[in-house]
Amino acid sequence: MSQPVEKNVWVLAIVLAFANCAAPIIVFVGSIVGGLLAPNESLATLPVALFVVGAATAAIPSALLMKRIGRKKVFLGAGALAVIAAIAAAESVGSGVFAWYCIAVFVLGMTNAVVQQFRFAAMESVAPDKMTQAASRVLLGGVVAAFLGPELALSFKDLGGNEYAGSFYALAGTSCVAWVLLLLGYKEVVLAVPDVEIEARSIGQIFRQPVIWVAVLAGVVAFGVMSLVMTATPVSMHVLNSYSLEDTKWVIQSHIAAMFIPSLFTPLVVRWVGLAGMMGLGLFAFVLAIVIGCWDQHLMHYWFALVLLGIGWNFLFIGGTALLPQGYTDGERFKMQATNDVCVFVVQALVSMLSGWLLYSVGWDMLLLICVPLIVIQILIIAYWKRGLSELHKAL
Image (tube, rainbow, N blue to C red):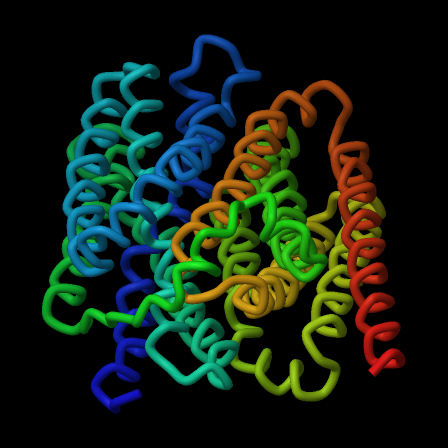
């Protein structure tokens, strides 16, 4: 792989720092704004859920479009759409129309599905043995977004004279920056399509491989647990427990930073304990987060729980992302990448929609405990996969 193409990894990491501001801004103020505009308080987290639903809706169409016209054109088109949607969200907040706000956030979610493809674009820009490192490096851009997004959302929230409308005008600005960087820096990568026989495999045939189940469920559980807790946190902290926006912002920023900072070390972790070991560490971090979150609801309990939640997400998600290519060929990559992301986004959307209702219905502690079955399922599927590998090695 040539040096200019390998530079895609760093270009995409820098672009992600701006393009991924949508996620922390929606997480930070999305449900708070939803609570101000919604006709019923239980609908406060609906916009955050619709952000994820938008991503799920666009995952397959955007991947198929990339296969047809290339990644760069789709990246640029989604970037332009993000600018329009962010401005529309700001205008809807200013006018106080909840329905239009929800639609704008839904479209922002659709563009986020394209942003999620950055990690695959980076992995395709390097040699196979560097794929884990490439995925980790791209996710480092999320560290910048973790701080930049909420800071801009709070600093510019009153821009234009309406509370929180400025947060979305700021998002339009970061989306513009991301678009320019993509246009100037990203180089399209064209991979050769292998033999037709393997390309003809159906999704059902591909899913007969245990490695695919481990990889896909790793992403599903990572996003399911993380989204359920993260979506409820601003409402639990700011609305129910009266913590300030500054305290809430700090916890959310720390959480999102913890989602991406471990990417500096994940290649080393993989060398030490392997992909299965790293995913196990991620699940252990989730368990610790639940224990601390149930322990109490003081500020530092929120902080420690959300930081561990971020670390757990990183280890589990990167482990699944790096494992996924072991179950498909180059000719099947768009199909499986889209299928993987749809599974992730659908679960993320469901838990995001349920998050507000669960928080008000059963409380913070029970919401955390609902995550336990998801963690147990992932542990069992990893154990089943490792057992199969062990038996295969013995047979050989």
